Image (cartoon, rainbow, N blue to C red; front, side):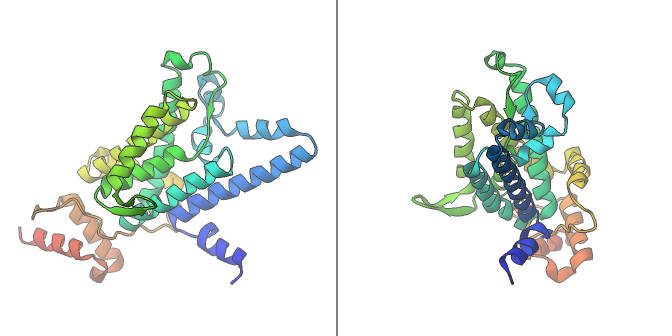
Length: 288
């Protein structure tokens, strides 16, 4: 199998949410970079800037009304290869964990809705705080960081005591990693990229609320499910669960919503596809 064929199968044509999001980000970066090289060679340097600016997220409300699509497109643009690599590595590590436990749909929701929420928080901050009064007319945001932080905090909220091995630090629980990232973003507001850190915090806040409300089975879940349809093909994407219901402990009776999800999984994949914990939960529910 050639390298190009492998890339197509594993990323471009893959139904795996994390791989697909990474592929889109990388492809867009490559295309924009190649266009920039072409325009630079022919001394059309401003043309690339003008092209990209149409898809960045403006802080100035009149500009936002002219290009509302930027609430989505901004999270697929990156300011340099290191910016792209850093975001995609985090998305790969944390997104695969979220995918393993909650499936494709929840990864799309956490990334896209977290990115949108982070963008809205960024816009709100620039139009409220006096710090940004003199620059909001020309300020813009770009990058996948808000969506990536949403995924990171979502999986840390879902699996707070899950340990990952970090270079020089050894095994660290996800909750401490997420907490440190949030604190660094809070401290970074006083630095030179205040707007970016605010967007990151917005994405992180959404990731936390997303998992909390998801497991409390509130009306928000229905909203998440409807909005998720925007970002996936229903005929191709398939949600799968693996040891999903980690919050039922100490013999506590599983909720009706959790049982519905387990029964739905049985209808799709059969009883043997259930994890040990899911079978135990089903057994507990049958005793009542």
